Length: 336
Ligand SMILES: [Fe+2]
Ligand SMILES: [Fe+2]
Picture (cartoon, rainbow, N blue to C red):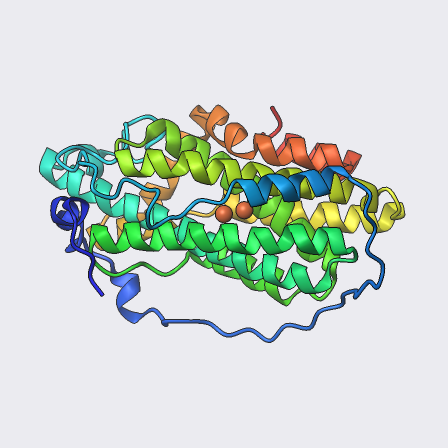
């Protein structure tokens, strides 16, 4: 169903943006997950930090349909984000485009970025639902159940937002799709937990903060404030719960988990999928575009460091930043 609103009317210009990949993309992907979990028969009444987070979650529920000012006028005549952090700037084929075309492209780029967030939110909802089943304590299961509802709201918000922009919702990038499948298919509860609460949540937090800072779309800025509050609780839950559990593991097991997170960080940091899609649609020289993006990353090391700062802090807080892991992050120039 198409939703009619000022946002929809004003942002329709993005609907006809070229997106060659979505024409052939599959509408879904399948999984078959095995899970190792626990059903505890013990219901402690002790008030722990996780219990307090559960109380905060119950009090902090909001409604993506009625609490968001969907009717608020958007700045559609402008670019969706400020130029800060746009890696296409300085790429000659991009710079020489007329302003109207750059604006159209920016809205398309925006749609691709928001679609990645939407697919990430759906993954978080899915994994959180698996965590309700397999986490080892009742208290953790209760909190995870609130996280399922939180992530459902985030899916609801971003999917409605994209529908109002118009056009098809682009499929996830390969890097994100692989990460989602790896997390969903992983049978061990703690690996699943680390993927969701440390890796996905920390990266999402950083991305939301960046978006909050750069966006020129009022409704997005408004919703991100709500979403960030939810995500902060999820990250806190991950850190509280994992710190104790990881302290019980031996060095080899810890190293395996640290390596798992960093392998995925490396893949995501090098992911060029969004810009590849744009370059492909525009007929740009992709090798030249990749060189430009690499140069841009080297010239702006703070952007990636900012993006991964929350993650490294959280890895450190739970004991996942091993000596080998730290060395690897330094080599990747991702340590602040
Ligand atoms: Fe979320
Ligand atoms: Fe979350």
